Image (cartoon, rainbow, N blue to C red):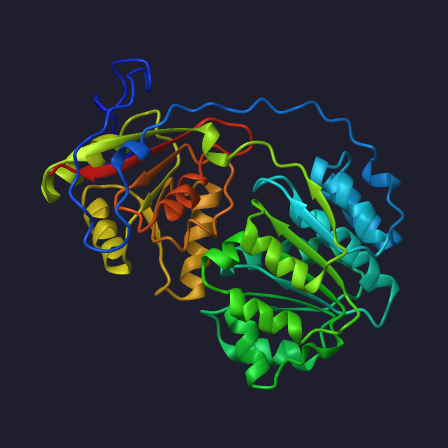
Length: 401
């Protein structure tokens, strides 16, 4: 059935969404990963009311290079977000900064503005920006290109899934700013195509996610190879003992700015979809996806093979879908993400690579078709919905035991 055909659908249409009290469904234990009590997948959204915030600055108030200010004006930036308002000035003063903020609050510009200003005014400055996923690194590099247009700043993007040739060519041009993921940056260091000894500015973006993904040793290695005298920026949605311990070892005098308000999941209605067998499960997903309230959806599968199989099944039923997983080339992943962002397709099927890599503001639903390995993975997945102050929905398929 084509995806633009809509029909009656029992999932939530006949009653007020999430009006029933939570109940604990019975579920069989997963073959791999952590057992998660299905009752934890049921929660009524309880958005935290954003506190009124009056910024101290306008972007025009920041004393930055004229070329950078022209790019800021071209982007239409006038009033900074709270994280931008409080960290840009500290960054311009040369201080180490820890920024704690929810995803989607404008943190990229919060560190790029002071960094680009310094690169434009100090020819000895070199910056390294480390992100946990290829997609996030690409987003940062795109923003960097826009803000530094016409300023002579030259960069390199070092991410996995892409050919080494162009990256090596970019590095030979001695870039003053490098954006990349920990694994690929480490590869270039080991191949001696990248020497971090002269890099005196560093950004670790989404530190908590990097540690969740097992990059702690890689991150420590990268930090140890930078210039001893450097300015550091650390951005994280959470500040637990792992994150604070890592930062304290390298930047004991960093200034902390926290503008975090509640958990991302507070904005997400969470519920379960029971199923008994594979055929019943696919039918339930079909019924869900044709409901008019489901406007833009990520469907998570546990494995690459599962993504490929579900992509074929949904295409066979007339749905136009995009797919992302770690086995696809970077070009294929970028095309899929671009199509999803632009709305050319409204259904993305993905492994957890997308839980930590997609920044799309208008996702209405997250569907856990494949059970997450851990509850932490679950929270990262559902955080793709309920962004920018909107209410989102997360539905987890639970097999009845």
